[in-house]
Image (cartoon, rainbow over all chains, first blue to last red):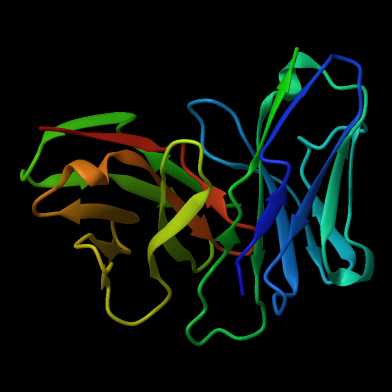
Amino acid sequence: DTGVSQDPRHKITKRGQNVTFRCDPISEHNRLYWYRQTLGQGPEFLTYFQNEAQLEKSRLLSDRFSAERPKGSFSTLEIQRTEQGDSAMYLCASSLEGRRAGWDGYTFGSGTRLTVV
Amino acid sequence: AQSVTQLDSQVPVFEEAPVELRCNYSSSVSVYLFWYVQYPNQGLQLLLKYLSGSTLVESINGFEAEFNKSQTSFHLRKPSVHISDTAEYFCAVKGNTPLVFGKGTRLSVIA
């Protein structure tokens, strides 16, 4: 298993454009999470999925943000009408829930760095 | 809800000196505790975790952390740091919500 993959690694976009990021989790993991990290801050939770169901969304996730996880495998995070304040590192993580013994917590991808100009 | 406070935003330390990065948490439920490390332009890597059992947990590269329930702390220590330990360190807590992170501590090891 190659871990959690995120694509692209970097994205520069003009204000007002739409962007979409992809995350491929560890294949046997049933939960997938999206976090946002701005400069000098810790990661902030955005949303998560249990298989294909989106179970929770943070207040940080405005109406311009949408996330999907079709078929419970990869996930996409779309930002519509980007703003300069959306510039951040977007991190994806996955975990296997339901088995507490030896639980490894979340495995993170390398992130997608978004710059809105 | 849970929260995490990392008391130091930056910690400079000379090579081979000991270091402690402080972490306090708040939660009304039982928690799991984690330390993650982040190198520049990379994602987060799990350093060590406390789930249950022994309150002292260790990583493979010499870091250790002790869960102190009465003080709601999970401080990270290393007796002798190396240049390669220079990175951002994040303490995180999981209770009945997804993982909550502190703001991070930047450890800078000086030769």
